[in-house]
Image (cartoon, rainbow, N blue to C red; front, top):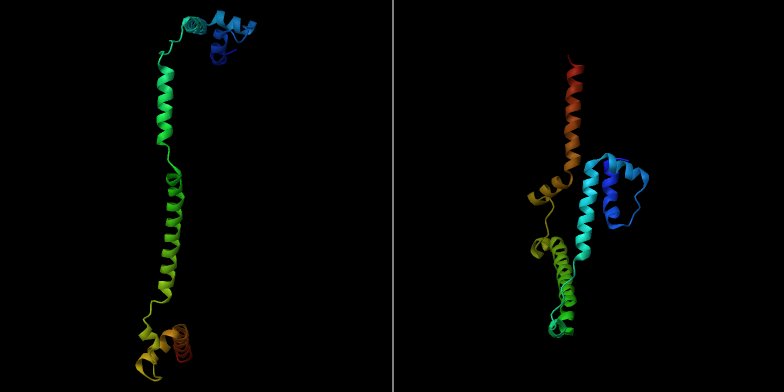
Length: 157
């Protein structure tokens, strides 16, 4: 057996819970450190066996009962208990209302006057809107123009 194995068994051996087997006895005879540790454990256990717990004060029970009555009076009433769930529910409603306002606010960000304006076809504003809507289409025309230029260069060297 190794010292590590013996050290794990020492508290039980000192308390008398385990038997000293031949392997343990041989190791303790050969290892002075483990043997001295076992003796120290046994001395400690002997001191603990002699120790007596002090008697509580004769007024301990009376003071304890008075303290318990005082703590029972301090316990929250039904309104105190009811306050926490109501507070949590009000915060939840407030969060839902805030999120709803944020999302509906994004959809109605345009003023009503701007939405009600009628834009005449052929005006500068309608032309800009048409260009904005067809931006991808016009960017493809640029690619076609570049291809045409390359074909012209290769055809007319």
